[in-house]
Length: 253
Length: 371
Image (cartoon, rainbow over all chains, first blue to last red):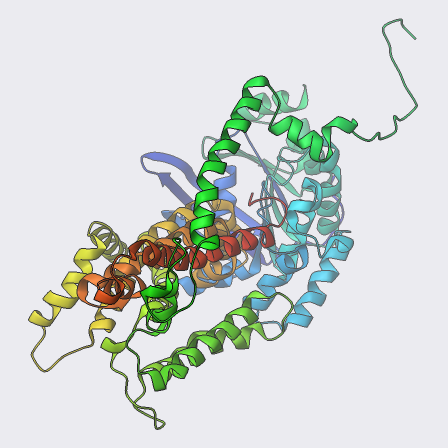
């Protein structure tokens, strides 16, 4: 059941006929995806299905070889200016957090506002503290990432992305590397973010999250989008055989 | 509850460790006398130390002569430090005119103040002091040492020598080789084919040539290729040779450090919108340099000692000038003292660098490594 919220008509992310190869290996096959402002998309699928690659193409951590990707009106091509514009507007949260271990939590968060947005240091630190409070971790601001638990680190990583005030957030399996007792604290932050109207693309195996938060669930296999539906239909009435097989594997264990 | 269930509600208190595993006695028992074989080895080692150290100490310190005007002052049968004492100024300053030696003292004194300022934590204005040290200081040092303006007499570089020359060569080499090395390492990992191949060729070329060859080339071959009127200083040529040679080594140390930084760090930096130079300067290099401290200092130490090779192109560093002193007919036969002194001078500086690097490693340790 989706929460009620505003989805605007404005397209935030548009992928048209996106193809990608690793050498001879065809990883993304004609991926078409439209994400409207305020929409929450969950992408699931077996490992190696290209779901992470898909969202990593959106901010050019991976380069696509064919097709068009347009983010908030900017076309993603080899123009470094466009890539930088898109990366400023797109936040990303990684499976392994990827916090900067040589910087404190506060410095991790204030870094990009200072160096990319040219915000004065004091103001940037205020922004950082604001988002650290939002993920309920402000008391750890002066610690180093290595002194925090996995769940805490991931919440810091979310705050770090939010400090850039992104238009879209990409989540690449944000809870897969966490101990079971820490998954909830991260999911709670993500749910809260969704309630505030953030445009989100999440690659995740947390089907509970998909059911409560997503506007659409996308199932990928072998580099293709196999099925795309609103969550209630997706989980109760899957159409494709491959979707059925995948759902039965992850839901009935 | 079934019979196999076990449960406890009392938390056990923390107890101190058993007495015989702590303290001096505990330590000795564990490390020196843990078994009969270990006890024997300990005693044997102590004996070896005794038969080596006692004569050395009595030669170098107890039976030694320290002051005097000539070799006749050496009567005690031990080391004759009189030789060093008499020529100490020359060993430090080379053939730099006696009246002008304050200029060397001032140059190194200023450097010492700046470096100590940078090394002691909690002192303010580190940024300003680094700019002073790296930009303003070298210019002042050049005018002080070489002279030629501000009413200072010109002192040609062939008069420079001794420990001051060794330090000048080492410091210039160290300060210049690190940034060049970083650039070469980044270039070698670059995706731009021309930059990459240039760096690979440069590094492999300079690493494949012995430093002696480089110095010979710089002092003998280079003037042959340059037009007659272009004559640049022998010391400058040696410095350029040393920097080019050492930056190739430094590049490989830096590349090793760069490879240890996980891909996720680059990706996180890129995802936040940092461009290449900001990503490298703010995220990758600070972490990589921390990992590289032992390797970098190792290269620095090797460089410091390699400076003594300049003696083959006729520059009188500390080793060369002591050797020259040994051939003085008035002081024949004191080579043990002379070389001991040189070794001690090198050791003091190299050990200092090594200690400081260990201190830095501890200071930069922030819990866990990169993920």
